[in-house]
Length: 231
Length: 305
Image 1 (cartoon, rainbow over the protein chains, first blue to last red):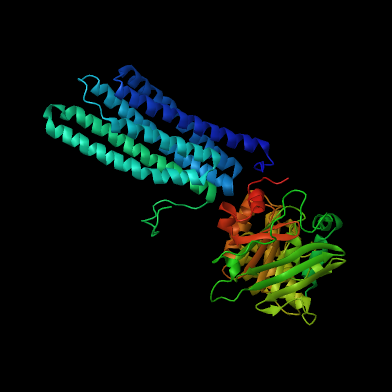
Image 2 (cartoon, each protein chain N blue to C red; image 1 turned 60 degrees about the vertical axis):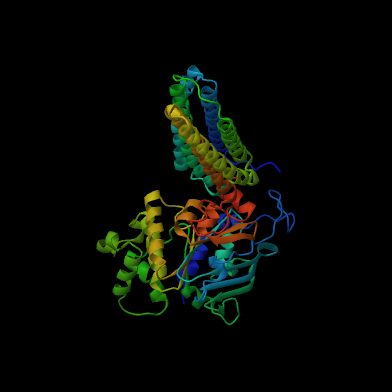
């Protein structure tokens, strides 16, 4: 059954516009992450600079989305699922903006690393980046399709991401202990890995908000709130 | 005797309005032309006001209430609990039965030609629909305020407030009660210097608060409000809503409103009516953030029709 439309078609159009803008922003964050990691792996400083430059678009869209949400709240007094959609938009826009900043941080590390001789390849870094990208993509798909199962998938996927980060951290630590000349470069890589790990955490925030948007139940911080199991 | 509220009913039941409240003949009892059929009432969730607040006797208990206008079955098997000192809002599109429901609660529905109600309607656990119940006595306990302010046009402000008392046979000066109820209705400061002026010299919002004071003067336990602010400007509306919050400390209030934001602002529990069915009742916050029923969702988000 097709979702029922609002009696006021203009309101439908406003909600669709908001959704499209969020997806556009999500797409730009995806591109920023992919670009920053490629700049790091392929030692492409020009690409790193482009990523930093394009972050302005992401920031601009964040402000636009906030304005759209404030306007809809003021003029439409949305209720029920509409209200949850707007509050979700207001929250995930902050996560997306922050994810863009993390990509910029990685691009900055790439720029610095590219000025020094290359280090030996760390394949887990690429795997970690791919995983982050997949998590974001899956969270955005869950948002579009209002798919709770996929959102739960994202939340569960974080364990793998964390394990990979820990493994990479230890590898880089060993690398530094073996050869003190690489400490500066390895620290930069470690920093980039940390940004990826945090990127993944923001993808979880998105997924949690999707569940709230669809179900109206807040699954965040189960331990702090005295729930035993993960969602 | 309180002919006061009764004549007020008749004032409010001119044909046009009465017609709005009579839903068109239904094509079928279980399916609507607009929306798919669903169970009539959502099973109450644990902890909702309607599942009876523990340790507190409900003020009103409505069980399997049915109402007719002649052969038109306007209200189908409505069951609902109203806790004491709370505000219950009834919402729904025109003709959904919400005003019929309200009028059943003080047996004004039966004043309409062909009006008939069956079922159980308990006030403090005692049945209201029984033959031995005097509707006039009942209406003193269950007062009503109408959509358009209807003060007695030939009476002063003071006499309007005291009208119910006088009609009940109370003699002498009612100044004390007049002042108290005008204060309760948040009107005293605005009218204390012109108590002998005609009620019609007041603004619409003041007239409506005067009508609330008149209803309060006979010390009812339940106050029914049928669109009490729909004819008022936003400031007068805010005063009425503020007043509802105040009155809740002492009275049990049931309000019918077309304004969903108003229902959201003033009520503790909200009942959604559609085509004579009580579709869903629950805590107001839940009804407006995460209702159980798709029809409720569609209505509160503006997706009807």
